[in-house]
Image (cartoon, rainbow, N blue to C red; front, side):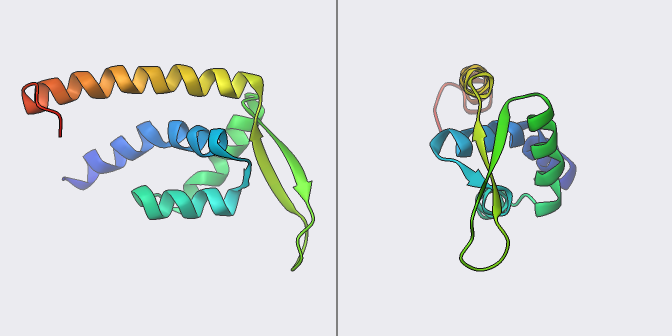
Amino acid sequence: MPEAIEIQLKKGALELCVLALLHASDNYAYEIASSLADAIGMGEGTIYPLMRRLQAERLVETYLVESPAGPPRKYYRLTEAGRQSFNSQKAAWTSFSGAVDQIVFGGAKA
């Protein structure tokens, strides 16, 4: 896949992926970044600005948890607006990806 296309696909799905991870459980930014790096190859530097934006949009909120080694960790959790956004984005993704699959694979799912 050409690099520019892969980057755009990742950017387009990044917010949905973060919301999905937080829908599954509260987490801190480094762990979210590690999960995304493992799953889709997104770099850590991309996550922190997104987390700040999601917080500014009140889709996530933070709280501190003491760490046995080092300073307290800032955990993120979805707000009610974040849960609604996740559900809306998930439905849109399902519809869109299904339509793309229909075109690309001629009706056969990958």
